[in-house]
Structures are given as structure tokens and as C-alpha cells.
Length: 242
Figure 1 (cartoon, rainbow, N blue to C red):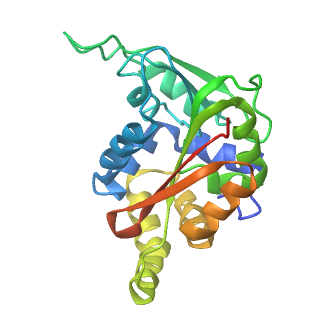
Figure 2 (figure 1 turned 90 degrees about the vertical axis):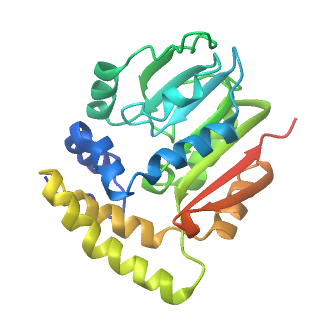
């Protein structure tokens, strides 16, 4: 498999994730040293989906994150443009009902492109995307499309890789991404070369204040963010104006 390039042609990016699908969740767990579970919990708490609410989880992959939004009874659409990821997720889907707790809402898997979402205007109470916005060919257009499918007063939560605050530490982190991350991935997956692209895309991604500016330019308001794990990950939250 040839890794995608930073021009982010949709067919190339989708094919790359199709090839990673079977071991994607394992790779994330190993490469983040288990921190991805903490990040998912924080995102779910920020989305705060209540009973009967409709959540759109973009770049959902196998739906691992999607199920965290349904524990209080919300309904979630796990949307991705990688059919391989969606197929693996649908096969692994389980009910996950906790005795004595609220019944989780359903998770439905749907193929879709973040630049042209197959949903009506204002269809969702909350839209979220984790580690996927930087893989979109036009992130600004995707932010506007997310605004379109969110109801007035609805919520946006974005979880993406960030940058460490100290320049020297961030430079060291960049070297780790470029060397260690693909090397470890190759030991666990025949598609490990794809992580060279992922490392490059992380290094090129804007810092939190710049992303916040772009979120606002797309029409969102009340924008805030929080760094997790020393800035390795940043979670942005915003509202669609009433």
C-alpha cells in the first residue's frame, strides 16, 4: 500500500485507512500508550449527549468513539469515508448495556464525505470529529458543512493532535512522530507505512489558536479549547449560534 500524500486526495486517504482497518484500534492503543482511552472519555464528557439526542461522529472509523456517546441514551451516526473501517466497526458492534443504567442509544454506520454530508440541515444536536479533520482536503469547508447539519444551539467538539508548548520539546516530539511512530506501527501492521503520512499531517496541523480562528470563520461561536497530555491532543468545543 502506498501512503497518502499531504494533498489529501480522498481516494488515497480512504484506501490508506481501508488497509489499516483491522488493526487500527490496536495501533492507536499501543502508539498512544493507552492515552486514547482517556481522550475518548474527555470528548464524550464534552459532547455530553443526553437521552434522545442525535450525535454525528465524523471520521468515526470502526465506531469505537461512537459508542461512548450513546451510554446515556443518545443516538449516534458513525460516519466515515473508509468503507473498510465501517465494515470492521459494524462487525464488532455490541450492545454494551450496563445493568441498572440507561439503555444506550443505537449506533448506525453510514458512509459519507465530510465535505458533502448526506444529512439534512440541522439534523444533529451535536457533531464531533476526532483525529480526522486534518485528513480532510478542505478543513474550512468541512467546518462549514458541520455547521449546516447542526441545529441552532447545537454543539461541535473537535479532538485533534496538537503541539507541545515548548519549542524544543515540540521539536523532539516531531522527531518521534517521524521516526518512532512509523517504526512501531510497522511491527504491528503490514500497513505501518501509512503512519509516515499521519506523522507528517500532525506536524503540518495548525496550533490551537489558529484552529479556533478557523472554527469561528466557519460560523461557530463560544469557541474554547483544552490541551490534553501536555498538548499532544487538543479538544476544541463550539456552539452553532441560535
